[in-house]
Image: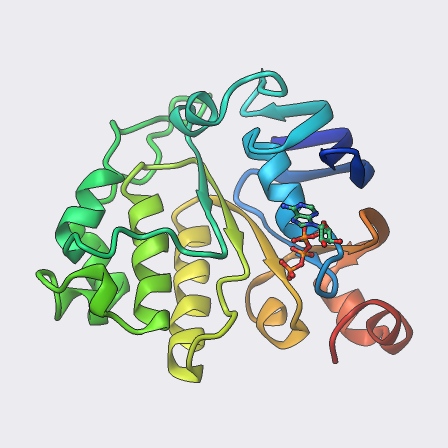
Length: 240
Ligand code: ATP
């Protein structure tokens, strides 16, 4: 499988505090990979380090290019989408206006295959709730709707790979299910996804492979099926 994202010896710091310790992992083209671990394990920091949003060291290759010294906007422009956990939608802007802000030009994979191109209309078939409220201000939506809007806005950038930080956190069960369906659809479209998740039930619905983090280090890696069958690893590192 062609690697879309390759991380080698990634470390990260908040000021003097070292948070990540030499992480190495990869996400193949068309793969859904889950980064799992409890609160504070370092999942969010890993995503921020990939995006260049925290002090980091190590090698990060995306789509064949070294992005380890690029700035966040340059990384995003290469087709690496990031959906942060804290949502960051514009509360005063409508659903449509929020989507417009995410718009970028269409892209292709290195072999010339076009990457999926997203329009609001297409996204509304993935997220019917958003289609029912195109003119609603972001600030007047539920947490789950805001979460969907954040994902939809990221997709408006026509990314090749998406980092999804805890998409199931704090949202209603119905929306969790929609979120899982969306991830499965995105995979079918050929996108690669790195997902951060604490909960094995959600991860199981969508993931091919898993890396388990604790205290900023990878403690286990393997297939989703292998993790689902391994009660010891689940008890040691996950919220069950
Ligand atoms: P969560 O599910 O809570 O987001 P996580 O696995 O994503 O957990 P991180 O948010 O990456 O974990 O946090 C990893 C460690 O970094 C934790 O010990 C946390 O306290 C610390 N940390 C996070 N943000 C900061 C910050 N801005 N300044 C200092 N330390 C931080």
